[in-house]
Image (cartoon, one colour):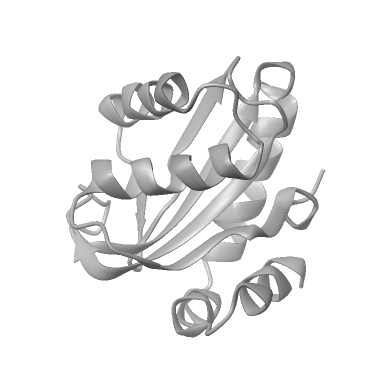
Length: 149
């Protein structure tokens, strides 16, 4: 399974209004719920916040990859959000985040698929050029195209 297989344009929001990590995660969780990917948005958000409390998902370059493995995920998928404000995220480079890739993992995919998707995202996002292009993208289609390369 590839990131491009689980990324859908209706799960990308380029103008998140959030001013905290928690509110951004809530906005992205709502996006997943409205698109039919979740059965219980509050339980899923709790799973993501629990994971966030273990260690940071801010990988640097203004990007975070939070993730939640949950029985409330109907299909493994990704929601992407770009915030209008920079958010404090306890990133590895101690810089704020404004681009969030939220991975929602179905219980059946909790090992192999989960690790493979995180690895693919980390490789893609290790490139400063790719990160710049994602942050500068104007449409959801541009985002999906970048992840499909």
